[in-house]
Image 1 (tube, rainbow, N blue to C red):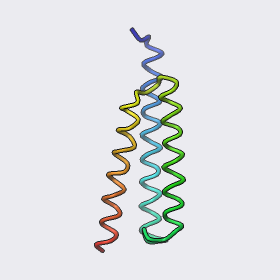
Image 2 (image 1 turned 30 degrees about the vertical axis):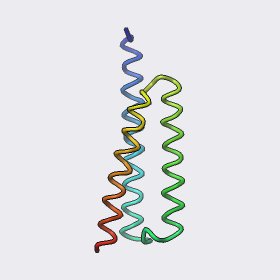
Image 3 (image 1 turned 90 degrees about the vertical axis):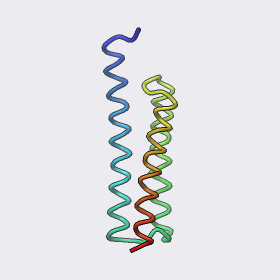
Length: 93
């Protein structure tokens, strides 16, 4: 059974990772709205760098048993789905 402290750390870790994923989504949305199109190398570089950083954070949290591997994959999958929606909307406008 997990102690209250362990549960608190797990909840905080998940919330922080989710907040980082949300920041990436906002960053990419601002970039798409104001700076570059998805075909631009700068867009690709920013997206790749941000996604890599988040995946490393998630991997670290999984190794510390703060979140499950499945929770980490869910955060990344959700972000990728939201980014795909943004990308499609940019292409259709």
